[in-house]
Length: 187
Image 1: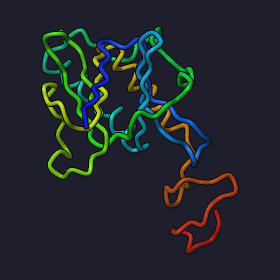
Image 2: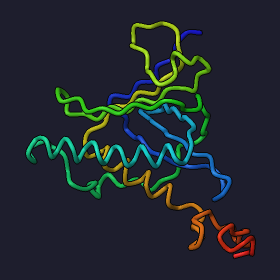
Image 3: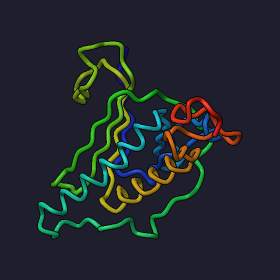
Image 4: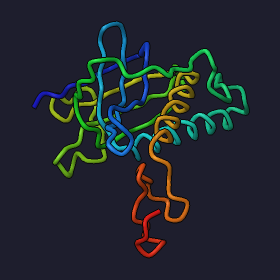
């Protein structure tokens, strides 16, 4: 199949968001420039790990530069984006492999999300641009400040779900849950 590459360099907006109620949410990455918007679905854990890794990457680049890299220590408040996902949310693909990098020449964070593939050889690698066949890829280049803002929002989206049980850590439904640490009693 011909490979689709959805590239945003830079996007006007790049956010993690959800559709649905806690416990039944679907997580998305969404990039938009003008009227062109691309949404890809992924797991809650993938969003959480991506946010953590973006923060860690920026902190490491700042550390290695001796504090001279143009990276804010925290997300600038003017970049806060608490708005909902742009509608309609049309899923282009479900994310399997993700890649994250710092481009020192452009001083940008590169986020790539590749569609799930059944091909064992392709799993875990993102093909070069000159390859005509392969899974779809969402590629986004962000300034360091925009990357910090993305990570801040992504972490907030993940933590906005159901609260964890204080005993077992599993999510609590509004009516409670059967807690394995309480020998099956409802909490």
